[in-house]
Length: 459
Image (tube, rainbow, N blue to C red; front, side, top):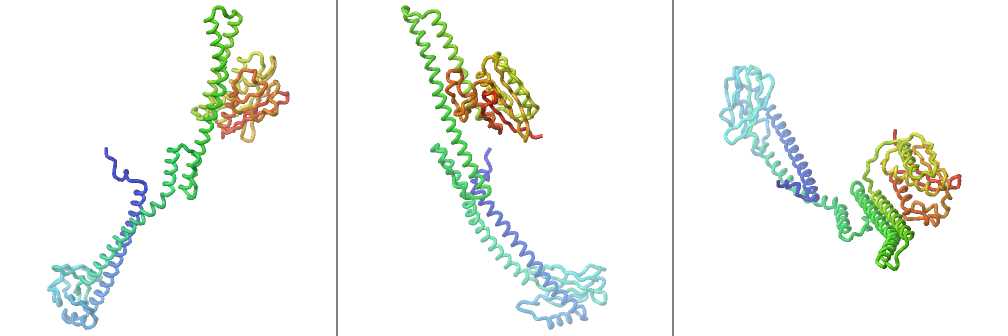
């Protein structure tokens, strides 16, 4: 189906048309009102003059005497009073006499109540007259008519000039509308040019100078904010890819070396591995494959976590922490878990929050000695709820505390332990996305302490 022509116009053309139409409508409306007011005023003056004529004519004894009196008492100008006509009628509505330019006037209806004067229009051939009817003392009526061509000519001239002014106004409105549209949409043109430049060059640092105010200024500011967010996202993506490539290189190299060793041993019977070496090598391969799988999974979680797809819902944080504690307890049977929880509702994505709590608990269990304890506590107040995890391990060195939530960061003491260095980065990302904060410190027992703070859901 063909689109309406209006919808195919550009925004600038639409704005110009709307401005021109608004100004044109205003000019035409003002002209029409002016013409109407002038017309009413001219006819009011004309009727007032006819009324005074009728009052004078009502005192005469005949139409001829009335016409003579009117011509004597008035001061006609050019073509003034030339169409004056006086007609007498009886109370029964019968015409009793007429004098003047017209051969006859429409008689008043029989037995009409003429106690009040009234005006009417009379048309004869191409001429137009205005007639005033007034009562006489004998019960009859007097009708005075006069040509109204001068009034109509004046209205015609006024209408012509108003039409000219309206046409000029519409033309001027069109020119002004185009100028207004061009000026008003200049910031939009700047935004368009900037967007096209970004699409062409992929350069996200090309910000727009915000000089306008109001909606256009907000649009430019939002565009700059969007460019900044895209630039940060691209930088984060590049850094993640670079870090992931660096971290994947080591386990892949180890896997390749072990596989090549097995292949070489099978290809050279004189260099067969012992059953013990072969078993150890296969065990290492299995461990490395598990670590590589975990690393890839955490990389996927970390990258997709930047674009949350899970919907937020109101939920009890204590229920999530309880489920996480139970899952961790089953994975670390040599570590004891103690939980002191309070009821607190948060607006959160349940799977993401449980993953963050699990990562903290796994980290605490990994560093705890056999038979050690992990203490999990909750406290709520001031619109926030805190989940605290304390362990009895060696704790985090002071030099490492500022870096524990960085991607792939591993302290010197942790390099010999399994892990990718991404678990706590995921924790920090999830908590931040929920408007909270994740911090690390030393616990009173000397171990590590991790605090996850979330805002409470509104009542």
